[in-house]
Image 1 (tube, rainbow, N blue to C red):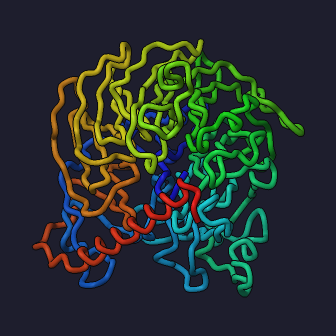
Image 2 (cartoon, helix red, strand yellow):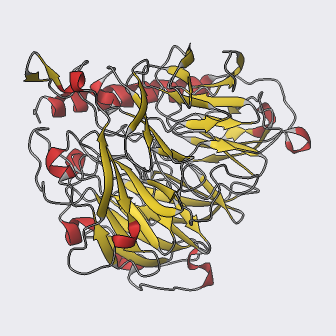
Length: 547
């Protein structure tokens, strides 16, 4: 996907015993559990807060100017992934524009491990760029994968198209697993990096470019799925800079590895890559369907697939058993007057970028495209997870990157055009559509009868999780929001491109203070607009095949 194109789509993992709705506790995976349902049973979550102001001309937020904010962690300059929380630690991807190590400077993709109580960095993984530029590792996009935590291990998909397993404790408890981290972290032509206690500890690494022949388009993105002893990831295989040629149409769009060793176990064999319109960025979902573990995958060809993970047995090429597949584009999005409709046109077909949600033997999945393709028509489908047959579809939704939230017979989902929709989960009836008046990249988050959604204009919109539309509140974060709100252990986490906020309630909240001069904010906003204009110019050049 492109520079900005990472949806909030990212990650989560879970074993077969995981519940469909996460209980009050950690949020260790994208979506909270393998089902990917963006619903939490946490209580007393904040509905009002103030993100505060910068300290003078710095990029540090003055906590004295905030309200209901526990702490604020500085990220890089672009952050599209979603934080996960487990074992007193927070894991979040960003870029290296605020380097944490003077020895590891320059453009890198960074995974930060933060202390849940304070937001202070415990360790980091600062991955060098591929050197391919926008074609496969877009500059300054950072790490777009949402990490999956399983016990004492954390799994992430890097900008280099690798699946990496890390020790949650970093190098502080010794160097486990592979021993070449120093070389791995060192840029070409630079002195060998000296590992320290605040560096990541890599246990194993699987290079999908080298092992599977994957050609990631623009950037690699996936929130890993953990089922039992396996880890399933999408590969981001896609088109090249021309947007018409697929360098390796035979490379898989999804693969399964052993979570303990990184050993290859299997891949999809449906020829998804050969039919891919742009790239394969949707994170897989999974869980029990009629008591049997199942992988659900939204393809870059616009088709939703179900696979049997038990068929991933290893060998040179273990092809996953396909349980069913369903085109999520209606025929009129594919053809008009007997001719195929072009991709990236307003009324043309879309791929699946949003993460499908598995809920009560049904799959809920919208279609969409890279935001740089603009707005367009969309659809959300409800699929019988046993048979793969359509239960209902609704075309009221526009193109969407967003993972749905399903609770109490309602489906809440946002679209890129900026609408938050509420559908009946059984019939697909549209109850309401709320216009945020801004683009929405991330997903809805539902907790305690409230729907949280972040907008590109920088608002967190809070709506009633009911069949009657009601706006409960709106908080201006004063910076765009591309990631999705996350709730864990009584705290709401909201990420902007530059900061991660831990928002609390009651006694945990800081006292509000008079607002300071927004001089620094104006400076940062101007710089952000400049960078955005530069990126849009570059994206336009790429789309038209010009250098």
